[in-house]
Image 1 (tube, rainbow, N blue to C red):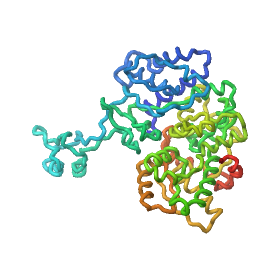
Image 2 (cartoon, rainbow, N blue to C red):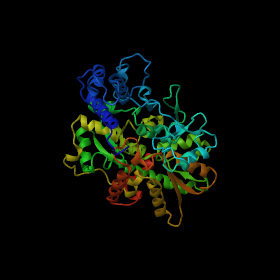
Image 3 (tube, rainbow, N blue to C red):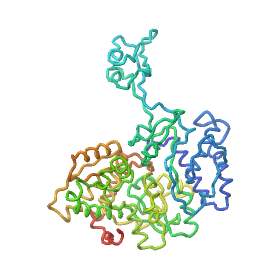
Image 4 (tube, rainbow, N blue to C red):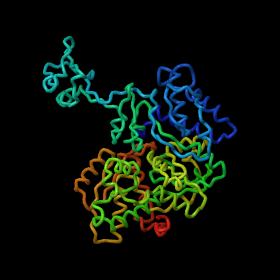
Length: 507
């Protein structure tokens, strides 16, 4: 639903804004303010989007807690919203699992998978749906002639759907489960969505595909703002998918000006880290494939990498050991600015999962999405599009580094580096987007179909531009990122002068 401003997006934006305002107004008692916020966000005595104003406020309350980085609670727990609020008021609170949470009393308990007859059924005389059903699950209503499906008998084969000339029979799936490429979502005892965290890789696709706004992730908005207020030098590492996320008139120079106004020490483009990653993966590929490894898969997307290691442990060593652009960028900042902190600003929920890892915590201090940043800008009344341009812009990354944000861009960047250094070597590439297709890709690689290949996987359909923390339509994002990438002064990663420092950043 990216690019469509729904009521869910409005509420999420309001929550992020109010959490940011709480962080900035240090004179406000945080515990009292969070108790009052559900009444400010959902005023009145009558429900706005649900039939119960009390239910609406309870859901908003849990969303506020998650936005503060606090645990999600069930309706059975008796505790104030401000319970354990002191855990959120520390300047630095790392994400703690689970990152993605189902607010159970907000869940609509959608059917997991049901073939159903709609009002489009005309009660035709041919009734082919009855004839093709192998289990006799479809019958005719004797009064109106319309088809009826016995759900106890139905095996969801879809034959009745295929033969209906009116397209009056449909398959209805739970949207969050349909979007989950890990099959990690099922029903609990009350029919509500439940996440199997042994399978979940925190890609966030369930979050953006739930039409009831029942799924939310944790945030570090509050902690990052408090760190800046405490005098910490916090550098914003901004992913290349930022283009267009804060309005069509937003430029890199205006974004830099906005970040400086918020108190960031400076801003660096993560496309520089992407250039470093491409250089490292190119070197690894040349050294290891096919002599040591049958194939090599890129490491850029943390959800893809986590999926591969969970489902294909025997092929885990084929995932590149190269550090991700986020981590390399953070290391670069801290190499030049000892004692600084780094806030990654990007499109991805899974980057929050990556930052939880013990080996990344010392590099990346905060992870926020573009959507969360809009709340911070709103809290400070910063109109990014109308700011005066900062003449320094962002950074001079390569075209290939900026194209990491779109599907196919990572592999292309690695291939271009290899071609520069080893022009006679032919590199075969296969890529997939969306975790279901990524699983198929690795299954084929396991069977030997892609020996000698460079494999690229992106958990989000379309690449990083489709991450759970983005706001504009995916096609538009891919187009504007492509235009922005072409503005780079050099094409490949080797043209970025920071690549010369790679050896200092990699153990």
